[in-house]
Amino acid sequence: MADDSFIREVNEEIRSDRAKAIWRRFGPLLIGGAVAIVLGTAATVGYRYWSESRASQSGDKFLAALNLASQGKNDEALTALSDLEKNGYGAYPVLARMRAATLIFQKGDAAGAVSAFDEVAADNAVDTAIRDIARLRAAFILVDTGTYDDVAKRVEPISSDGNPMRHSAREVLGLAAWKAGRTDDAVRLFQQLADDTGTPPNIRQRANTMLDLIRSSGAAAQG
Image 1 (cartoon, rainbow, N blue to C red):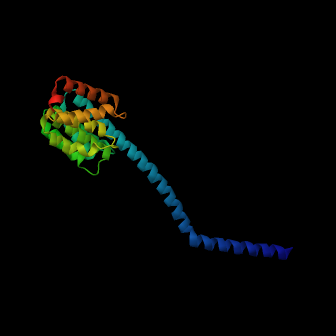
Image 2: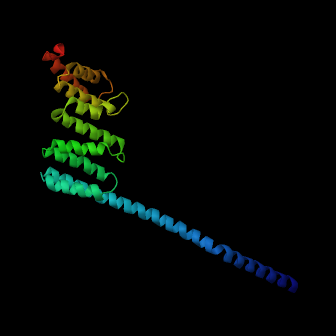
Image 3: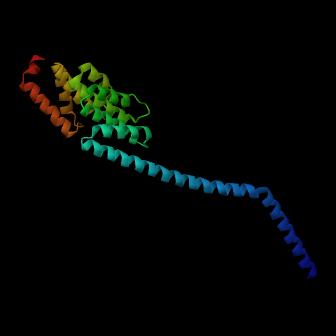
């Protein structure tokens, strides 16, 4: 029995020594790995909180700017939007740019508004859908203040079949063509909208109204 007890003690010492050796060799790596996991998790949670916090703050600032605009305080609203464009987070900087361009137009500066929308449309860092909306906004302003070519330059690329913005693009092209005396082009574009089953109801209704207006005026026969 004494021999068995002695052997067990020796085996335990050996196991203990091996455990200590293994820990001395791999312990720091295990601790480092555990710390890295904890830090990584904390960083992820922290970034998520920081991100949501920043987005929330930017959202509050954007709403405040909209409230200023609704109160007719356009200059103050533009200042707030300019700050949001520079320091905002997420999608809010580009939304601020778009809203600022609209305010510039409402203040009577059509050329400045077109320029602001054109800058958004030319910015490759901006989402394609927003860039296309900027093109449309500039084009609608130019129906009254520019030429047909000015309008076409901005929206013809998005008027092709399959483009989600094609209906609005064709509508603004039709308006520009009608204003420029290009009656045949206007009728063709409005008829295209009227016949397209994918045309949104409000745009189709306006297209049919324009067709009735053009035909009742006799312009279509002259074109």
